[in-house]
Length: 146
Image 1 (tube, one colour):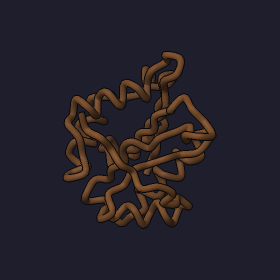
Image 2 (cartoon, rainbow, N blue to C red):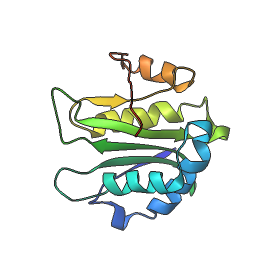
Image 3 (cartoon, rainbow, N blue to C red):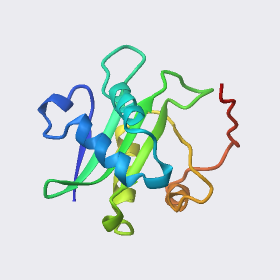
């Protein structure tokens, strides 16, 4: 398994494109996913060089096939809000249970500075992985959709 870390500084030299990563995430996220256009916005934010934006994308590959991906966005904050938010993580269904998600998570934990927040559905099997990696459930998230 090969893991590539992409940022605004490294995306140009990579064979991986935001569109290929978004297509993978759109398919692999299944019921936990978003529209492809929203995934593309998230990738654009992570790969932005604009002040106050940025992040990183970790992609695992076997040969030239994407087997997993994680997207971290920088929040531009710290202390009261974690510096990073994990927006997407997905592993190809044929690769689940083989440690791909754990390796991707370890890569982004090592590749970021500051705390990492994430949102996870209570019934998402990935919740156990996050807990094993040291994530805790500090708050119940509530949203007002307008």
